[in-house]
Amino acid sequence: MFRRLSQSLFESSIKSAYTRRFKEKGAQAEGVFWSSRVSQTARFEQVLADMKAEFGSTSFYIADIGCGYGALFNYIQSKPAWRQIDYSGVDITPDMVSYCKREHNSHKHRFSLGRQPKHPVDFAVFVGTFNLCHTDDYELWEDYILHQLAFSWARVRYGLILNITSLETAKINNHIFYVNPEAFAKKLASRFGAVSASPTQFVPQDTTFIICKEKHERHTTKLRKAQR
Picture 1 (tube, one colour):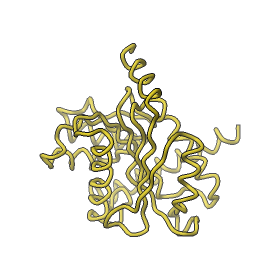
Picture 2: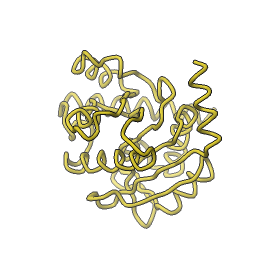
Picture 3: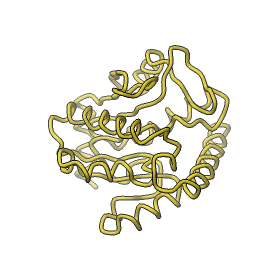
Picture 4: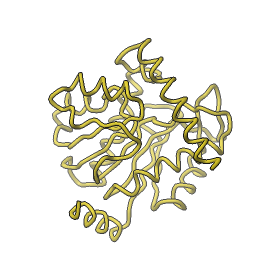
């Protein structure tokens, strides 16, 4: 009961904050609370390169959870090296999804309202999705993150990739959530599967985590996809 109430309150706060910010700043990095386009792009490159390394090519299907105004889709479309990626974007904020459908009218089927992939995918990615914190209770926000990841875990064939702000001491500072990379990796491993973590290139105080499914889990997800 308490968890459901917390999740609901968080999502209400998230929708309100991002709707206000987007109306104020528009479709740019600052419009979704990114510090700069440079750090946004660096995070994109990191998750895309990691997925390519895991998959062995760029012919994979992803769900961008917390897609915002579709910046990752724009980036993929602008880079020939990544255009083979089959993209879908998901967000809990109606204004964001509506914007994406209008802006990318010929690709509007790729965007949907929700918190998890609409269909089974190879990877679900969370690019800074949980950095902006909507509570001052560290454990409560961490629990929220794990709960959100679990929604997508059931619908991915290969795994989850997320980058998140990090420090040696885990804390919430100025509404930004910082994990201790080692401790957070252990939490992810105990909840999901094998985890690797590395500093996000060119982004200080940021770590990218890759959570991989075992081969038998991949097979099960593939069978579920075939049965849909």
